[in-house]
Image 1: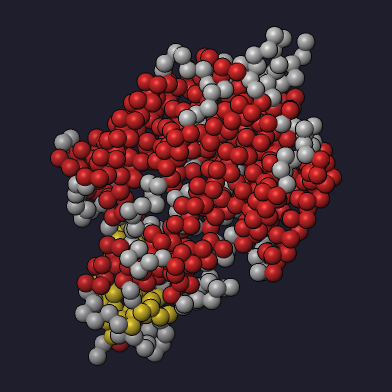
Image 2 (image 1 turned 135 degrees about the vertical axis):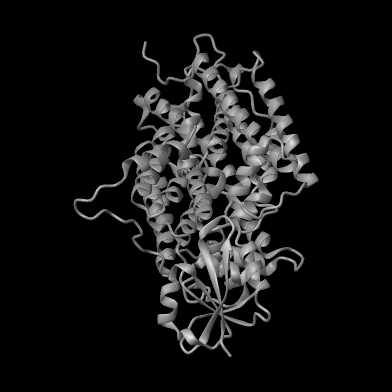
Length: 562
């Protein structure tokens, strides 16, 4: 007898992950990285710089710029929401943290939309487990909730999600709107109003965040799939051609909005004739960025190979293929690949009901050893910085971040200690033989990833802030200026200009000849061209200010000769 699906799941295996534990777990992953740090180089401070210019009224809302330079990542909506947040925030709230508030909401939206997207896909008849001869198989709703819990855990476990999802950049906005689009397409067969609104907001948001072509491809694939494989239990008003027409209508409206704001532009970079890509680098990025989801995705594709045309496999597979293909051609492959993580996590979740006990045990042991080892390394380096014992880690940090002075903060230490104890408790819980929930194999990967991220963003945050922020450079530059006033810049990057604006509060201008300001800041890389662009007898080199962790980013400070 041929099984209709490869999933064999009893009712006893679909226990819900306790909601309070799940909410606390998500909070422990979302909040670290947004709280207590400075804007980091390069994309984070760069995007914040455009938001800061808009909030201060120095840039046009329809064409953000930074001293006349357009954004590297062409978008509108991410810069708008950051600027709006700074404008409405109270005066006592730091502008950089105020700008992060809508991006915190976008990350929460990503997790929430992914959970509900997986839930509605798991409810479809094609995704249901094999019915038992004498009953006892998983109830459809309970099964869908358990698979959705597994999908959320798989998303959090992905290594590539951690840093990019905690930056105030268009990439996070694109991720949030992609997840919202994914939910809308997954839930549309069963609901009308909320999924249709979510689909519209997701597609418009993608278009205004710099990814209108990907939005169109997502909608096209979703419409075709909705027309060809509408679930048997779908609502009447969203079945077949009706649902496809809704998707097409929403996609056309979203495309019109993107075109109205002049956001349609081909941003992929096909290779010249005869050129080849570095496939090894692309493969390496795919391997680590999507770990541990990609082995589970391959397992899902194999075990569900007879159901590849069913929507619970085909929809996330389409999203994943579009994102992977775009990452091959995009100038920033990691940020394009980021948009595929919710879909890859969904596919990984559908591997769970097909696992054997030996596979689950292998995942558990590998995860336990890997993340426990990572946590131990993080603690050892922190202890070395605080006490000097063992001396080698502290010496290595001193070489990488010269001038950094360690300090002890009680609250981060308490949070890190509590997270470590929670990890130990989670390991004990997982190793109990009575645990049968199908999402159990992803508890340790997600918990280990959350632990590692939280430890890094508490124990290592001071040294990371010192190494990745431009604040130390700006402070040294300000200290060498007796009266900063008007400052011209020559050859500096967008990130450096944004940092000088925010951290230094300097009145910056593009360098001109003859000069109108008493001070000039230039990159050391363009030092040979400075005398050619400006009269050398008019400027005196006051200082060369190095960035502590990167000697290639030295900034030259010139003062106009009286």
